[in-house]
Structure formats: structure tokens, C-alpha cells
Image (cartoon, rainbow, N blue to C red; front, side, top):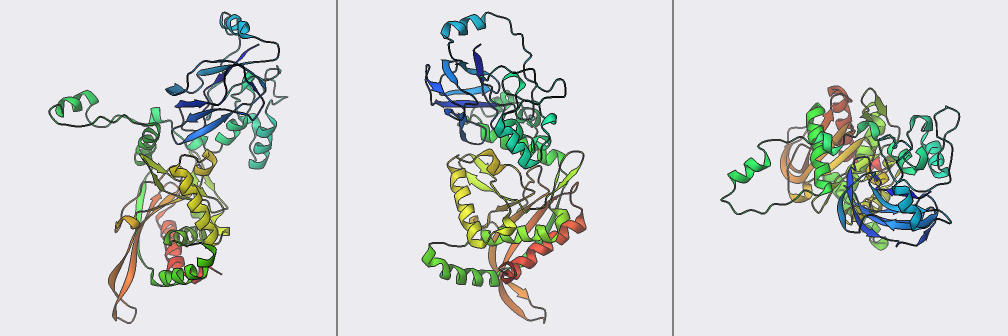
Amino acid sequence: MPTEILMPALSPTMEEGALAKWLVKEGDTVQSGDLIAEIETDKATMEFEAVDEGVIGKLLVPEGTEGVKVNTPIAVLLEDGETADDIAATATKPATAPAPAPGPAAVKSEKTAPVPAPKTDGKRIFASPLARRIAAEKGIDLTQITGSGPHGRIVKADVLGQPTALAVTSPASAAKPAGPATDVLSKIYADRDYQEIPLNGMRKTIAARLTEAKQSIPHFYLRRDIRIDALLQGRALINKQLEARGLKISVNDFIIKACAMALQSVPKANAIWANDRLFQLKPSDVAVAVAVDDGLFTPVIKDAETKTLSQLSVEMKDLATRAREGKLAPSEYLGGSFAISNLGMFGIDNFDAVINPPHGAILAVGAGVKKPVVGKDGDLSVATVMSVTLSVDHRVIDGALGATLLNAIVDNLENPVSMLA
């Protein structure tokens, strides 16, 4: 029986996407894992794989089509012996199977061999081998997941979407109109020359998530000035030694390392908000804001506390480059417990950053500026001072705990040799 291939949800926040390019044509034979299309999500352009084998019987959505809703049929897959006539015959029959229940990350649906109804009797769980392996690695209970594949089968994306499902609010439900209605604004500015710019998927997602963050997260802010002369001197020495290897350590690399080590020193602050509980992470998975055209990404450096400055530098450059090219996978920008936003390179002295849920905190970093400072002995001198602000989710981290975390970050940055031990 022909099976519809549905528009996948390639990230937990995706509600619609653009079918940028078909990588197959009608009549092509595909195997499980073959690339069949490129889809523009709310974050990036991603390649879409076939789950099972078959023949592409019909392409239902032309390439270049925008605003295709998740779970909309985009193609039809035929099994051996089926023809285009079977597609027409199937279309005339009323649907007998219930539509898959919308899960936290409903995704691709393609043809598989017929299997009994999944998970209804509590005895058998129907999942792809890859989904089972990922679930085992992540410690996820497959009985708690609603499969979005054919006949309710659990596929890879169902499992990948599971850890972040509790913390994500869809753009449609989170983004509420603020201020005057669009038609009212059009009248107000009717005599002014302006360009109307439609919102792309990334801008809609940013608007929804940050509106949600400011409305639902009780932010409070902690501020410190950090003397970074020792850090700058150490960085210059390290970079001189790394010239032969073509590496260059940035101040941001030191900041990532300092935050990762501080989260290990203050483990209670290495946590996220998960609705009715907290998830306290053991590794330091640190997200770093990267500006891209029309938006921003926050790629996550996992296990940052275990990596050297040169490893952090190489990984961060790679993530930033692929973020700007729109080539990050969801697993590379989802997760983490803590984020860094650095506007110092733009000459900003200080600012307050908005927490990216479900993170427990974000560090806003300003520029290093020469300032007069009073030493412990009362002498006046000049030092390079960098201002930082820690935005904290009060549901996750209380004031004293937040202060302890920020002090640990400051201590690491003012004593950079300790990060090299």
C-alpha cells in the first residue's frame, strides 16, 4: 500500500518549513538513510533522509514551496510491485488508521513493512534500530514516546526530540501580538516611506522564545568587573607558542573555559528548569551566542570542562562557521545549561542578556576597557577591566548560589593559570 511521506519536524520548535530542494525524482528507488530532500527549518537548511526503502511514486510538493506545515504529505513512497495507479486507488479510500498523535517532535513518515499496532498492549514496542540505540545511549524510556513513523513506529527524530520537549513552547502559542495591530500601524505610517519585511522562520522563533523567556522566567541580574590584564598577557604568550600550528586563542575561549570550570565548582548552578523539576547536569555544556544573518544561533560546546583552550578554539570556530552557513544539526544547538553572549568586540561596555530557556543562566560580556583602579594597598593604577552581567533564572538558582557561580567565573578569569592546570 502506498505510504505518504510527511513534512518532518526537524527541530522541536519547527511548525512549518520550506521544501528547498528535492534530491530525488519520481521513479527513483531509495534505501533507508538515502537523502531525499533539503528542508529549510526555523533554524537551518537540513537534509531529510528516507527511513525505509521503496520507489518515489509522486512528489506532492514542488521544490521552493514555503510554509509547508509539519505532517503535510510531500511525497508518496511505493513498495515493490506498486505503481502510480495504486496511488490514485489509495486516495479514493477513506483513511482507516488514526493520525499519529502529535508528539514533541513529530517527524518523517515513510513506507515500512506492515507491523502490528505499536505499544497498544504494553508488550511490544516498534522502533527503528537507530532509535533504539539512541534511546539506550540517552537512557530514554521508549514506552513514554509516541512514534511518528508509519503505523506509529518510533524513529530517530522522536528520540532526539525527547530531552528538550519539556522546555519548548511552539512559536504559534508563545508569540503573542504586542502593541497596536498591523493594520493600525500601517495607517499610522501610511505617509512615511518604509519597506515591509516578512518574518522568516528564524525571526519568528527568536521572537517566540525570547517573548516566552521574558514573560515566564523570573530574571535577576548580578554584575561584576573583572581585571583581565593577566589573561591578556597569558593569551599573548600562548598565541605566540601556537603560531606554528596556525592556532589563535581568543578571549572568548578563556571565558568559555572559565564558565565550564565554574559550573563544575558550583554543581548546583549547573541546572535547567524542566517544568515540575530541575535537571542538574554533570558535564558543563556551554552554549555560545553567534550572530548570523537575520538572527542568531547558540551552538553548544559539550563537555567544555574537559577540553583545552586550543580544543575549545577549534570547535568554537567550526560551530560558528557552520552556524553562519546554516549547516548546524539540531543536536549541535539544542541542550546545555548555561550560555554566553559576548558583545565586547562591538565596543559595548555592558548589557543584560535574556535567558534562553531551559538554561538556568546566561553571562553577558562587555569590552575590556582601560580604567583607573584602586589596589588593595590603596594605590591608584590603570587596569584592563571587563564588565559582565549574569542573568539568572530564580526558579533554578537563588541569589547566593548565583553570586557563588559568578565569583567562581571571575576568579578563573583573573587567575587564568589555574585553568591550564
